[in-house]
Length: 382
Image (cartoon, rainbow, N blue to C red):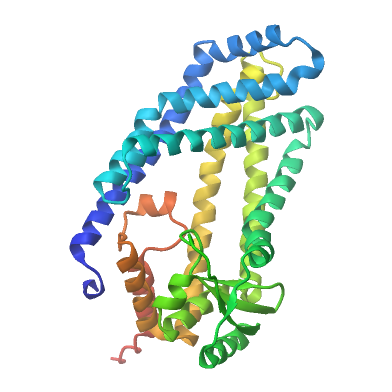
């Protein structure tokens, strides 16, 4: 299997992934440790009481809440700043994934921190608003907001907004369009043709995306996939996306994520409420209970993430199975992996714990092994 990638570069990528995964777990552990310190030292109660004395007006509670959250998050980031330097600068620099000096990185880090502060502060202020207005059903409202954001950022943006801001250029290869339509019919879709995005900074784009609602859609490729991949590989990648549309697999995954989010909000709220009451507070909506709410939310979210990632990996393997059957076989999958590896080396295989915690896509080794199992001829009978 090692013929399609450079083993030395793969080993370096594997070491990078292992280091980043360990730092991720360390940061996660620090979250709970700092939440415990925030409560046990009395800083959480002191900060809430200080803000109450500073802004005693009844209608000023949103400002107090926002200030409390912003200060707590800033303190967390300040304590973990050395880990941020290690994970996001030193490690990236050592592995050749970053080519800026520390000053430029620090400016970017500060801007990202300010944006994170704004987003997290707004999110928790909204969550506290729901806790106050709907003490029993707040988690349903939070789930509805999550579902709307997920649909908006995950679907509406790429499908409706991006094509209007950056209209894709139509593809000129009739043979490619015919192949896409053939595979589309197998998936129960009406593929209108191919196109590609013609603008800079496409690093975060998928190699191909199906644009359009319902059965009628068009395959739009990134500039790199359009220019660097052969027709077989382009059809293979598009077929994988068609498999997610087939039989509503993508919709089912979105529904599962929404249900998991509901479980996270409900479970975290119940746990934070019990912990707060046990410590003499009025409930989870009481600002000093912030450490309980944060720890509970992240604990349940981590468990939900493991489940969601596992289901997504199964869906990706099903997408591979459909593409292998209708669009090029194992050779196409291996060619796509080789192209990705040449653009940016990655670990071909990873330990189980890394995959379970962090990966939504199966490893290349898993994908190739499963593909070869499905295309291997049946063994001869005894």
